[in-house]
Amino acid sequence: MHADNEQAVKTLNDLIETTLDSVHGYRHAADGASDPELKAMFRDRADKREQLSRELQSEVRNLGGEPEDDQSLLGRVHNKFAELRGEIMGRDDSGVIDEVERGEDVIKARFEKAAEDAVLPDALRQRIAAAYAAIKTDHDVVSSLKHRQG
Image 1 (cartoon, rainbow, N blue to C red):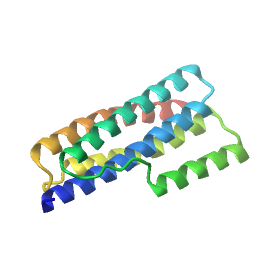
Image 2 (image 1 turned 30 degrees about the vertical axis):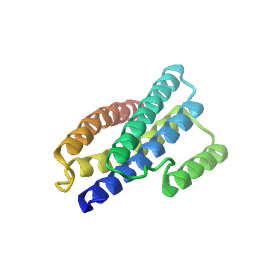
Image 3 (image 1 turned 45 degrees about the vertical axis):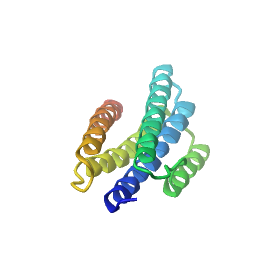
Image 4 (image 1 turned 120 degrees about the horizontal axis):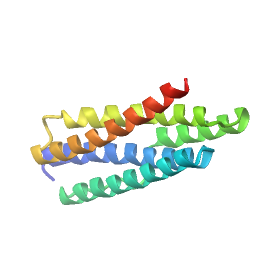
């Protein structure tokens, strides 16, 4: 595999892990939310992020790489911590929204950085930039929910 492809595969695999972290985070948030509209929104976002991860996996295969298929270790640890904290302190929609916003901050930053990576082929950067735009919109919606409750 060409060195540029290796870098692209590494970047994409990092994004896949982060996206799968988001899928798990949104599914956990849907389980923890009491408001039916929040539950539906979180489930929908989990499905969209799962689709994004499949698209990124396809890009890795097109580059000749082996795509990641699980969330990151840090993501698994964070999800476990959030689950334990919820069991100990109880869950409410405000706390669930806070957790979702933290996750959105992470994925937004990673996609933004990748969209600006000059080493990546232009077509791939454009694909990542489009995903970043959707992620930023999702982030802004969650941030607005948080500030309305605060």
